Length: 104
Image (cartoon, rainbow, N blue to C red; front, top):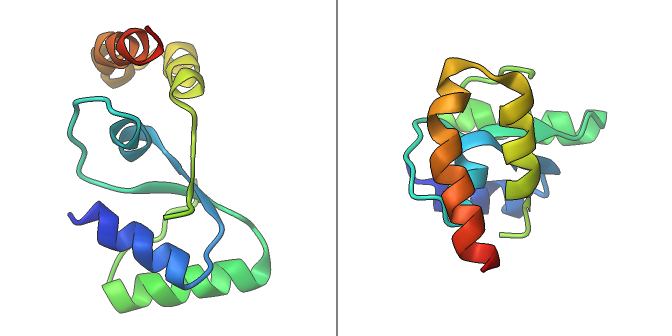
C-alpha cells in the first residue's frame, strides 16, 4: 500500500482526518509494518462526502471507527496501553523504544 499517495490524495481533496494506529506510528519513526490506513475523519457532512468520493475512486472500504494530522506517538502508546489487547501489547516495546530514541 502506498501510504504517501493516499495521504497526498487526502490533502488534495481537503479531507480533514487524523491518522491513527500503525501508520501514525510509522510516520513517527516506529520500525513496524501495517496493512491498512486507519483514519478518524471529521464528521462534517461535506468532509465525509469528499472522503466517500475518494474511497469510491480507490475501491476502498470505509469503516467508521502532507498536512494530515497524526495521533502523537506518546498518545498512541497510552491508547495501546489502555486497550491492552494482545496485538497492542505486542507492538508496545517497539513503540516505547522509538519514543526513547526520539526523545533522547
